[in-house]
Image (cartoon, rainbow, N blue to C red; front, side, top):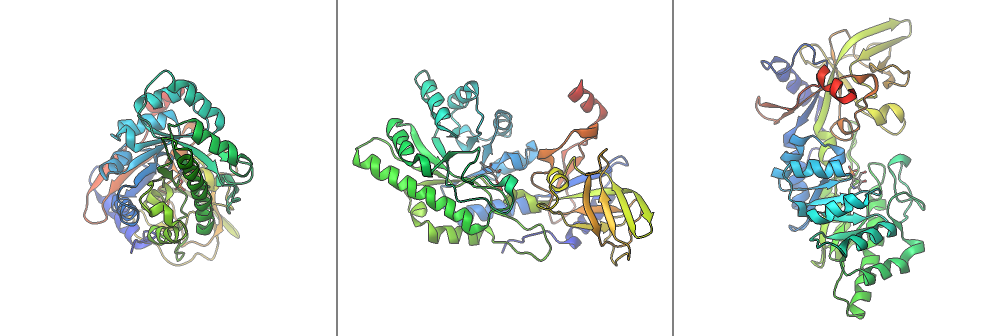
Length: 431
Ligand SMILES: Cc1ncc(COP(=O)(O)O)c(C=O)c1O
């Protein structure tokens, strides 16, 4: 059974090891992001175990674009889902074969489309307009790309509006209800259109909603294939991209549906998907990375006032952008260790607000929370920080992106995945 979250005890043990590991952390490493590579590997292996063997697991680059992590995923024989040309470039640099890369974006330029089609990556068109561009380009070049169409099944939003994309109106995909016939016509008109894609949202969508979205698009694809067969057309839909979006736990004691349970539920609601007539593509990001990463951020100051304490620490809205700008939707559990990485216990009778280093009042990671007595030099552990954190890094105040370290659960091995940014890196960025 896959563990849903890393325990506080495991994390503090690892932090203590990292702090005493010669040369790993420097005094100016005021914050560090650590990845448990064993967890990432276990999640990928779980995916492979519960889906058919020929499934392409295109791991979402947007969740974690670190080159060494992408290479790690590639070595585990996943694919990569890229949502921009630079993500496509990164996936290539990480060693993914073009036919294991899926290119999704609602904003592909003609040049980007031509490049992608020449490279042979799989791509999902997001609109009729984009299909038209692809058709034009394919008149001039040959391409080995598997091309799909992103459908918005309009099953409604999940709990988090900003990461829900299957409302009646969405900027992603082709809305199904009002376009069914036009979609059928496209498959008839374009023999190279052999895939279909659905992704309804990230984190906030409950499993029944995820499955309802896939079911609706599966019904559509069965209808398309029946129509094509009836008209003796040379093609059919054989690539079915179910997107990502399985929610993970950000809270101690909360056990969400795991991938094995999800695959079983999907199989019982969408049997045809597993009948062998389709190659499934998945695009999970959060499920693979979120629970595998955590941040240790030094407490620089504790401002004590009657009735409240404010902690000033070294990460805030730069690394936890969603949490700070949208605190009611996002959560990262916080625990405290001393300067050696040992867990602190007990509860300070005065509550704490945890604030980042940036110059705006909303740079707050948690308000009025209970913590043990916190002192300068302690570490705050921000749990479940492995997805959509570094990838959303904000340059505000030009603070340096922190050191990133990978480790295996057992043993003392650490690997620097990305060094802390230097002042010269910043000069290059802004110069
Ligand atoms: C098209 C697409 N696929 C996959 C994902 C990954 O979602 P998650 O990280 O929740 O699995 C996203 C996330 O926004 C997405 O937009």
